[in-house]
Length: 446
Image (tube, rainbow, N blue to C red; front, side, top):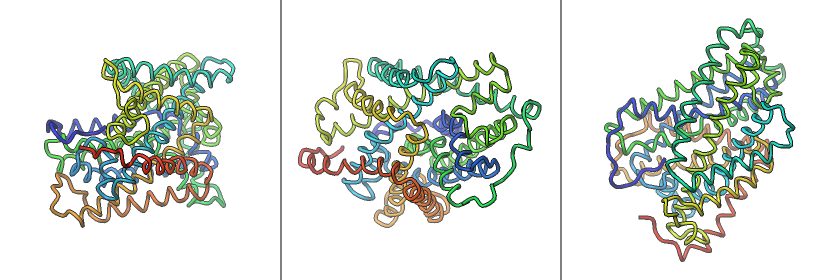
């Protein structure tokens, strides 16, 4: 969510900020990422739970840090403008380019892939129909978003409410009835397998959780609309992420009470499998439908946000065909930009690999998160007089920990999975010749 530099009404209090942070973060990742995490831990449950906590702590450090610059520079463009303040126009352009070409399309593709895999599995039909359903989902939702902003927003609201139902059902039923269906607390062992590379497991596992924690960057961006951001924003971010960490840990314990980690690592949709084991075929199907509605809404929400990225770049003539990409329909939707994001998302979706796509998205965007954290520290030195409605607590410890934690995860991913990493980074760097080719035509953002 981006803020305009003018006309912001400061009407958000602590509770509004708290609920917004929780709503922004909790999404489809909590239902599907246990598969990746317990694969990385090689079926060890204890360290898997620890990884969920560490991913939340890193997200909290990042949110507390980025909130300072978002409060000081509450401009349309969000992270583009924050990186511009610290590092200049070239890297600022690459932020928008990355969001347009890599981060949002890979995220949209990943969620659409797991949505279709789960839907096809629930219906018991041949998996060959999964890819057509994936592409059809992306295209259908892009058409909806192009036709009507209200329709797109309505789907987000509905899916936002519905996603709480499977969360609540699995947590309650899993904790109460899980020990009767599975092995209960016995499945929480072992903590880690003998001879395992703990450092690599933690780095890879935290990277996987960061997809589930994605959204905190938008929580910090509401600072300009808060009545008392200096006091209420850090409390909302800390408490909100504590609640989210608690929910993620508790639901994973509920999963493990029913199915051991070495079983979940073999399932792309562990939440659906747990629901079926707990509630039988009919009850499990109902819960799975709730999960599917949540994933469907996440695809639509990301398409909505993603289409605004090339549109914003086109407003400054930063992209080829800016006249087209910067246009809107009579209904006020950036249809051309939506088409661009849709095409790229469909290309990514052809891989058909959920974890592969989320790793590309998270690794690439976290490079720019780290630059945002560094920008906070640079601006403290360069512009000490800048009005800061909110300041990161325990400065400079929190920003430094956020930077080091992000570097640890990103560098490990580049070293251990260079192919995945280089796809995202390479496509992002393709923005450099675009920038220099368009530089003479660009308009400075207002």
